[in-house]
Image (cartoon, rainbow, N blue to C red; front, side, top):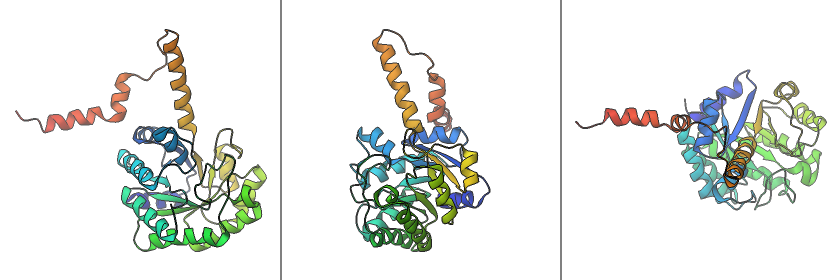
Amino acid sequence: MSPAAKLRALLQSDEFLRMPCCFDGMSAKLVERAGYPLTFMSGFSVSAARGGMPDTGLLSYGEMVDQGRSICQATNLPVIGDGDTGYGNALNVKRTVQGYAQAGFAGIMIEDQISPKRCGHTKGKSTVEFDEACMRIQAAVDARKEGADILIMARTDAREARGMDEALKRMRAFEEIGADILFLEAPQSREEMQLFCDEIRGPKMANLVEQGKTPVLPPEELQAMGFKIAAYPLTLMLSAMKAMEQALEDLKSNRHPENLASFEHLQDVIGFPDYYAAEEKYKVS
């Protein structure tokens, strides 16, 4: 099965999908080894890990698709990629969707923020007008129809910028255009999350940012509301950051860090055993 076919099968299953988000090949491998069915390349985390920069549209299409190619090659899981605003007009959106499909992504998220965009849980967001937002999703869907083997996740940030009614209007339009997954960013209460699920058909994703604007609800409550996917975009990044800062403080205090993963485990995760086996197979006597 292609990555897109794997993702379609997951969406059609009865399973509620918990989706920790990755930012590089190793984090994607860890998600797979932990038994999750899919992952998402978090734009916030990639911007932080690759450039040490805020998620404010500073990384280019080329940098994002390059990072995504490495992630997709590192895991057998279907990976959804953050495609931001599509990096330009309708033709740019189509090229972005095609490029993400060629890189190995199972899905791509396209959003309706004004470029340069920013993290949906930070201040200063604004969105394009309704017609332009629909144009972006139409271009993405057209790229899929024209041969890009990839699913389209349509996101709106209109809840904060223009209100809940406008956000729901955009979600309905994106679903009618043909988006495969619907994502209303940053609803601010249980009631708004439930309203989204009640009003919008099709598979829906909840984006759960620790200390963000949306309540971080347990999976069983999200499933009962009508969500299909729970994304955890920063959980791995925040965990890694805290562990690295603690290790640095320990070293600075002349203490060797404790509770580290073993060197053997690290070698196993990144594939040394398979490498050694292949090396032995092709050894020249």
